[in-house]
Image 1 (cartoon, helix red, strand yellow):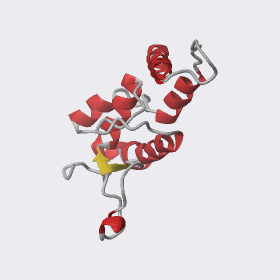
Image 2: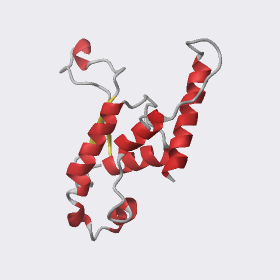
Image 3: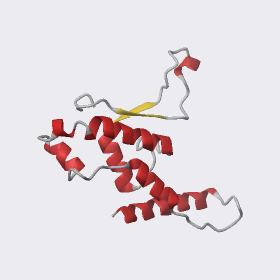
Length: 141
């Protein structure tokens, strides 16, 4: 991560215990740092809205923050990276801007009917989530 041209994108594990309760500084002990472009590419291409390290689900705000990060650190500095072939290969064509928020909204708009009672069981919820992710990835092409 230290060789990246921009700072890493940070996801915080909400289930993490603050270090303050353990006599520390109060910072989260489970901040996970990512190459923002690689994370966005993974999330959108796989349709998997979860942290690759912890599998904790991402929320809408995480997607918005990631898009803001991309706008500030990746797309704004696109000219600076024009000669970097890894950057060009990851980004694709100039107008192929990754939008994690749009992918989230697309996935969220897909409804999957589950059987059973009003609550449904955990297996049905996970199945519905997987089907939504697959459908959203298929629609994006």
